[in-house]
Length: 203
Image 1 (tube, rainbow, N blue to C red):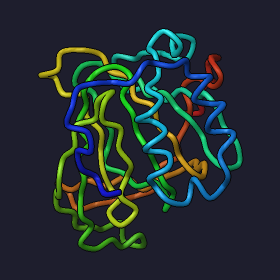
Image 2: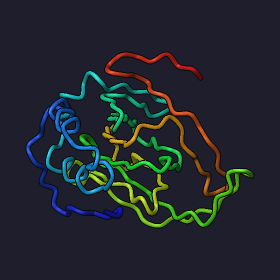
Image 3: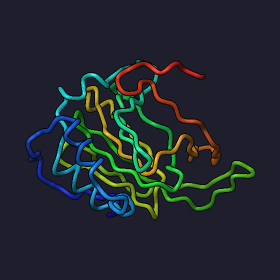
Image 4: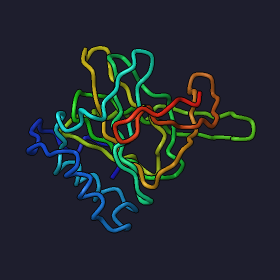
């Protein structure tokens, strides 16, 4: 599925505990993570309750936080916490699939088309393609054909936000891009917490 608004209604299915979602993810065959529709449909069917996420949520005024909930060889599930106005860099996912849901808040997923990318020189050329609203009623899948994007918790929303991210398969680095500067480069990814416990920073 490409990035587009798939559910125009604000209705949300009954909320479930995050461990119910984990149980369903762990029961899926490997093939479910190869395409994008199965997991997107699961996130639509099983919106997660904010209360069940409480043990995994941490906040930082300087930067969004990445909080690991579950991890197997097939996938990892993260809760990302965004203060008002926080956003990610423009980035890719190392060729892996990614799905996002928003148990709390309303965010924007801004997608980009990569005209060219030269990892040797760190040069690239990106143009904005489209923007998708990410809400509890509208989970989305990153389009494998155009996977470069950023996530923003807009100041106009005036509220904290939490997003759930399913990545298959797990990866620990990605490419970040500056559309304005026309530059790109690798960064290492880290967790702020793992399974509800702080992870010492290696930065």
